[in-house]
Figure (tube, rainbow, N blue to C red):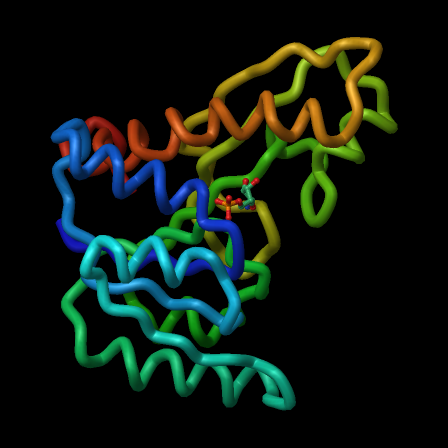
Length: 190
Ligand code: GRF
């Protein structure tokens, strides 16, 4: 299975996917990454692993124009699955239709709770005792597609947004490669 990974920043989930490929626990290939921010650390990780980078910045562009440019670049690659890993742009329904391949995302909460930005802060403000992360299919609604897998972490009384985010991130790095491998193995149908 060939993946395209979309991201905008730090790229720690992308790094976890690449590490799982390199240590043989994830049996996929990353055809290329799509990045919308020129200084995204993800670019460096891709280059270190000889993975082609498609950089299409969205500054001063309509969503339609930006997505059109991405699609025309992606035409040059073979892929079966689109993996969003910290991609900070909402995909239009049109783009989801045109890309014509399943798209998955990882979100730092137990969906359907705390959709959108600052999910960890939302969890702390609500006062939940458990939170976690969710891998889900992407549809035209934000953080709303079918849930494919989740991991749970406790929330402690003295947690800050940073400590909770770090605890969740450890689980994200295990969950995302595991769910992708389960898709490859046909254990999860998408
Ligand atoms: C992660 O917390 C992920 O759940 C969310 O964006 C963050 C991306 O982090 N969608 P990274 O770029 O993978 O380090």
